[in-house]
Image 1: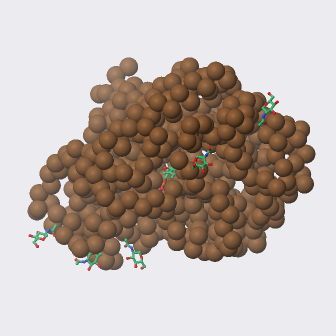
Image 2: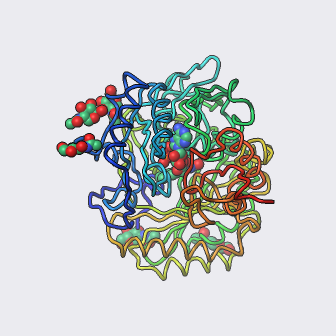
Image 3: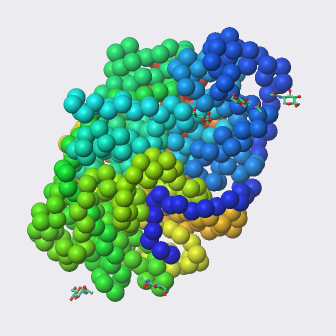
Length: 536
Ligand SMILES: Cc1cc2nc3c(=O)[nH]c(=O)nc-3n(C[C@H](O)[C@H](O)[C@H](O)COP(=O)(O)OP(=O)(O)OC[C@H]3O[C@@H](n4cnc5c(N)ncnc54)[C@H](O)[C@@H]3O)c2cc1C
Ligand SMILES: *[C@@H]1O[C@H](CO)[C@@H](O)[C@H](O)[C@H]1NC(C)=O
Ligand SMILES: *[C@@H]1O[C@H](CO)[C@@H](O)[C@H](O)[C@H]1NC(C)=O
Ligand SMILES: *[C@@H]1O[C@H](CO)[C@@H](O)[C@H](O)[C@H]1NC(C)=O
Ligand SMILES: *[C@@H]1O[C@H](CO)[C@@H](O)[C@H](O)[C@H]1NC(C)=O
Ligand SMILES: *[C@@H]1O[C@H](CO)[C@@H](O)[C@H](O)[C@H]1NC(C)=O
């Protein structure tokens, strides 16, 4: 197994597999007509952006944004219609007509949802696909930008760099293909988090459409709803069409490295030591280890972004992490935008052009991911125990652990500032990730098994009561899911407190205020308080 392109792989896989049992969806033909009629009455432009199941492009539009192939195989439930709006009025029409006709809406921006919730549902549904809602306008002087939800993180990074001569940025995740809509509404973090916090910390205004079809701005939605959409995960409160963000400064030169160490090269001791410095080193320094099996050894790849030149980095490393033995030759200086490309696979690309960050939506694969938070360093013997789980698997199984450091700015922001609550006290977050390209049930089971075994194994070493989780690494295994929306607040609080801690209850209050009928819902959306279900 080779350490290329870990989290943003470019695997080509064209065969689909029957993995998910089809759930029949009943929606009478006359209702089709009624729905389409409703849309045309609400909007004169919408006809051009409706894809019915009869349309020859339906299938390609549906699959275009499903990033996890588990959810694009034929037996998955399909939407009755896909609407790809260019105008707010078309989104308003989609909401009003879906409500009138008993259809659910799935909103899709970049389509990376780990559990496919932006593209499938067990009840009759449509997809509002924001693929063409992707404008970006950067005001370098005011250090702000407006970005529509359908834009990708790569394009956003590129436009900001272009308009600011590489001196401004936004703290977002490290995979350029991820969509702004899901990423911002769930939190969103990457290599700038220690210096600046997460994407949702930088949102200063938003435009959204609520369940009544009203267009809202920060001012008209009010501070409670504006609070709720910054980190609760998309799709509980409405469709957010665009976001205004505050930009942050990056230096003209940054430094990156990706240094592998095998067990023979003291990988375990280094990883163990890393836990004692990861969240404490200078906030300009982000070091994120990737742990995986290669041949008959384990490799720990120490990857890093430093916001400054190599001459300032080396003494910092010498002082806090001399054991790694980092040399000048291990490091590369570059512009921030070049580092964005570098961190997407740890390979040097000679030229950064628009194509790399804008047009290169990555090629799909099958994947499974889970996340944990760690507040106490994991002992050496426990790390070594985890290696056994890698060795037990068939060596074709492509799994890894990614250690993502916290501290710095993350510790300065209060847990209730926005719904994303994972702040002071966390040394790092641990991601469990497996991906494959073989479209067989056997490969699916093997990878699922590996991720679940690692996740269970780590139980004693990660946060407890609740075992914290991150909504952008959505995981339907962590509590009872909303089934057709019939979930009580009590039941939902099992996963709700893992994702949001006590912010969950404030989210329920906001939901009850703005969408009491629970129109915007999915398997893990915030439920409204309901007197029938939630008797005290
Ligand atoms: C390869 C890969 C790498 C990743 N790397 C990172 C990382 O570095 N850091 C990080 O923090 N996360 C990362 N993630 C997680 C990622 O941030 C989430 O999956 C995010 O929700 C994806 O957003 P999307 O728009 O692409 O997905 P979608 O599937 O389109 O949306 C995700 C959820 O949000 C809802 N939603 C989408 N758009 C809107 C909208 N406009 N209004 C309301 N609801 C909406 C959807 O209905 C769905 O429930 C990664 C995921 C993958 C697959
Ligand atoms: C498919 O839908 C699109 C968008 O509404 C429309 O422009 C196109 O004409 C339709 N194609 C067919 C074959 O119906
Ligand atoms: C799809 O096409 C068939 C025949 O071509 C027609 O009977 C059916 O009504 C159409 N369905 C929709 C939703 O347009
Ligand atoms: C998005 O817009 C482009 C340019 O107008 C168009 O070619 C494309 O078909 C649109 N995509 C979808 C899915 O509607
Ligand atoms: C591993 O660590 C030991 C000290 O514990 C040291 O003596 C040895 O040189 C290190 N090995 C490598 C390859 O760095
Ligand atoms: C794994 O094996 C390949 C092929 O023999 C070799 O090139 C590579 O260096 C090995 N990796 C490690 C970490 O030993």
